[in-house]
Length: 181
Image (cartoon, rainbow, N blue to C red; front, side, top):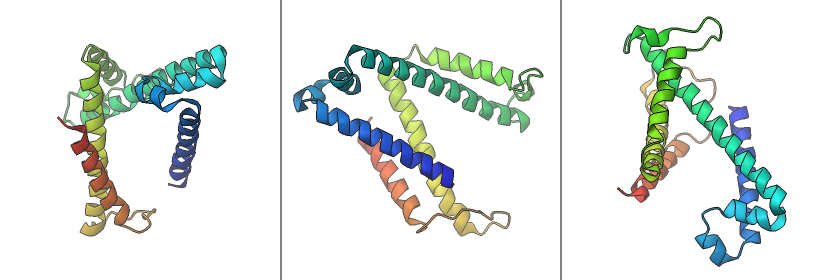
């Protein structure tokens, strides 16, 4: 938990500094209408090599995120195959690479198909699924804590429980409502 919290604060600090610099370098009118404000800001104080470097970093970040998404999503198929809720071949592990290769291939296929969907709908649907997952996670913490399940003995306990979970549930529901149809 400490590592997760520290990495979250490092990411918040990095993004906050980036937004601070972006807002400080771009005029308000340009910032309001730009579809690429980070790149526009970088072009002001990093010049052409900085923009190229930033673009390369964005492409690498996108590829690593996509790879992590495929690898983590395939684990759901692996677990479903092991539990008998999906075909058993999904639980097979490659002997050479020690990966659930059938699950990875199927997940990669469906993610590739999703590239042909309208981008705005795809982004909103993906965001909605993640937000609902966060809502359910907050709710599960409360349910597990209050149900006194015998085998549930968490090592880490949330400070000022259940306030963060309740704020999380309310905040994420607000985000879903703000997304609209």
